[in-house]
Amino acid sequence: MNTHESNGQTQGTGRRALLGAAVLGAGGAVLGLPGAARAADSRSAGQGAGLKSLPVPTIIGHRGASGYRPEHTFGSYQLALDLGADIVEAGDLVPTKDGHLVCRHEPEIGGTTDVAAHPEFAARKTTKVLDGVSTTGWFTEDFTLAELKTLRAVERIPANRPHNTLYDGRWEIPTFEEVLQWQDEQTRKRGKQVWIYPETKHPTYFRKLGLGLEERVAKLLRKYGKDKRNSPVILQSFEPTSIQRLNELVDNPLVVLLSSADSRPYDFVDAGDPRTTADLITPKGLRELAGYAQGIGPTLDLIITKKADGSLDRTTTLVADAHKVGLVLHPYTMRNENPFLPKEFRKGTDADAYGDAFGAFKAYFATGIDGVFTDNTDTGLLARADFVNG
Image 1 (cartoon, rainbow, N blue to C red):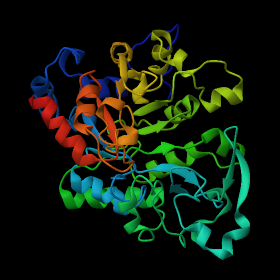
Image 2: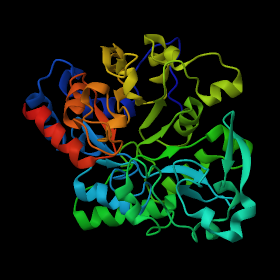
Image 3: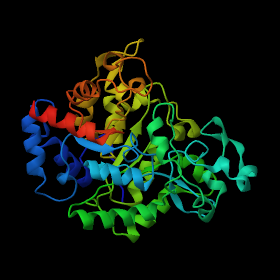
């Protein structure tokens, strides 16, 4: 399958048209719709199949309900569903030595598992260059799946989330295949379709190790019949070439993740492509992305810039520009704790204290974004209710 456009023209692939219909509503005009109208649009869209069943703005459980449980565990994924997430980001996909895909935020697992407490793996600690950055720790590609299954997950940011450390050691590392099985099980139990939003992590790095991610993802999706345009699995990556590769292998909705404006996707760095994220979010760059992707996942700072003191500054044209070429926007990441909020929404100085997250959600929803990744599903859902009913 190939949906690349010629001469820079955007014709609108079937998948992009479907995703656009789900989030743009009749006529594709999001920015002018009041909250109540947008809510009505999403409810009526729910009568259809596939992505049309998702409400707007979509609340995406970031690594599950990672504000309350150690990330990328079934405890976190399950809680996100229980809280009402529209989609669960399950998970960030990295390979094992023997070629299985597991869910970890990074291949280095010293900060998210108890591997350091396992003397049998002490010699596995090493330093590698990961996407140009020297990184020391333990890496999934140096472990078999059986070995990884002896480890247990721990809270990644205990300074901000000391309450999550209560659950350290409770859950093992899930595989992507287990996630697909869990998705089916939860769909049956709940009587409604459960959606997931996995990400290929460091695909250039792993391809050079002979552990290509995209083919493994596609094989599992085909095995479980989830490689179609209406399948409840949205795929994402920070590397545009990974999304292009997936575009050739599966029909799932695809999303290009975008970091800070001055950053360069690592596949661009590796290939000597001088373009930065700033180039990708120009009208020309967005048209190119729309040739093989259906959405973008920008950092929130690309939606509203920040001043030097961390307060919100200027709303960019990214939402309008992306919508013009049929792309949806699912920016990341909303968190309740003070350090992660714009300055004007912080309360007090405690690192683990909550600020005015509702105020921050409102500011970002007002830009017309189609959804958002959040560590706090319940907060996001209440904020959406305020927005669409306000």
